[in-house]
Every structure is written in structure tokens, then in C-alpha cells.
Length: 142
Image (cartoon, rainbow, N blue to C red; front, side):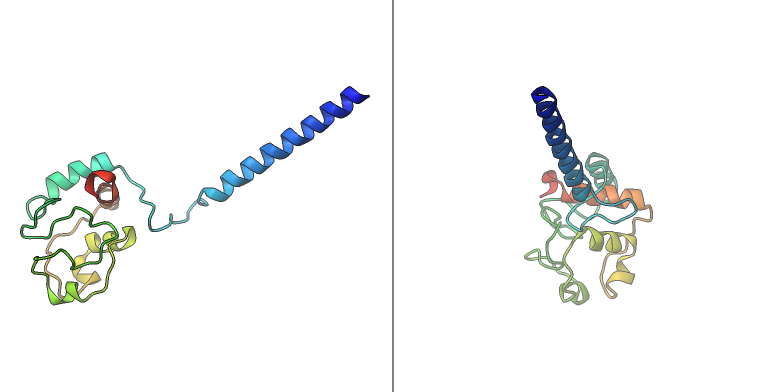
């Protein structure tokens, strides 16, 4: 009887601990169909780096401003804040912070997002945008 009681208690404790762990994991993971929090970037940063190299470096670099401002640290930076770069008044005074959502809106259609800005390039494919943003948010671009 004591063995059964001990075994029963161990089973109950183990089952309870397992239930708590599963509940914690489910609470920590986003529900299906929901957007992750803005600081969480879904995408492939390696593919994003290749896309950045092929599509963005004609005007931008991570470390030096060219036709466009330097991008190192752009993720979560206030728009129009790279020292010495000649931004449009619209971008400089936009108050936009470069979050994943705002970078997505910008890359989708910069003029629709901030009318009067100077960038004349769009990234129409959502997967490409997601991967470029994942690269810009990665440690390699910070």
C-alpha cells in the first residue's frame, strides 16, 4: 500500500510538473495566425544578407553613407538620425522608429509610408522584405 501511495504521488507530481511545463511553453509561443511582437523578426538573415548585397548596396552600406544612409544599427533606430546624412525634411521629421513593422511598410512603398522622402526603390516580395529585415535586425548588421 505504501508503494502504491508513493508511486501514485510520484505520478501525480510528475504529471503536474509536465502540465506546468507544457502550459509555460504554450503561453510563451505566439498563437497561430498572430503577428510576433515587433522586436521579434521572422525571416532568414543569411538570405537577407545576400538580398541586401544584391539590392541595397548600390545606394547603401552598413558602415558608410552613400546615396542613402549607413545601415549599421538601423533596426530600432529613429529615422533620419545618421549624423551628417542629408535626409529629406519628411523623413527627418517623421518621428518613425525602424521597427520590423515600420521597415516592412517602408520597403513595401516608401512614398506611401512617408510622403516626400527621397528613396525611389521598393521591395515588392514579402518574403524578400522579411529576410532583408531579419538581416538588418541580426547581430551582423547591428
